[in-house]
Length: 280
Image (cartoon, rainbow, N blue to C red; front, side, top):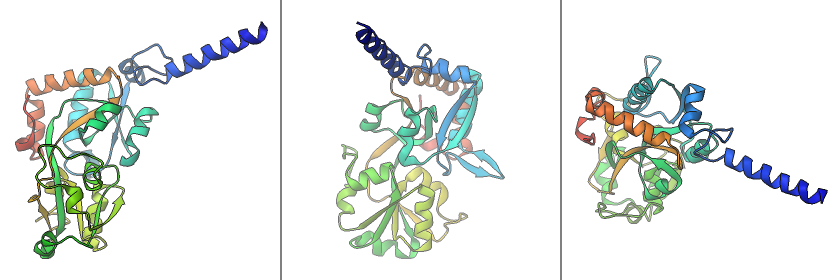
């Protein structure tokens, strides 16, 4: 009888520990995810560095997502803490509670919606090809045998590998386009651009929002060009939280308020994103 009682208690303890680790609960299993964040007094935001979303300027973190995050947190009475993460490990970081959300120009996909709670889209995006300007005509005519890079875990990689299915917005399949190319993943979109500049890659596939902000005249990549001729499909940027988290609804409602008072549009204008801002 004593053994049965001990076994029952162990099972109850295991179940309580599982409940405490759930995405919608705090570590003590009694509070909602938002209450868990509120209790800390801060929201830990997972990011990678790329313009115009989150980047350093004069030793200060700036960008559209940076400023919008700060505006939301100010309204909700918590402090934002920005943590640079490995993009390929973003869901692990989120579910282990090393971060509370992923707010960094992340494309909404069906798979991501299955695994995380995501807001509605707020910016339009597509996948861009970036290469040396002098080689654009040559490379766009034939990519067989070339070296192409993309950020590991990114939408660009997912499209190239066929892990993100083509939808009705796709004109050219990235998987088909690059089928005879040599693909190498890198750890960020910024690194992908550096590889092309250095000549260790012939081309990269990255978010158009990033490419148009970081490439061309007046940038560090003035000898490179952004090609959008191939429509690999339309995407929207969203913000991700732990699956079932009530923090998503809280942040979405606050963003709606910032749309209504003109704050979101003002930030978009500052970073040249007005044309791709999804109006609410």
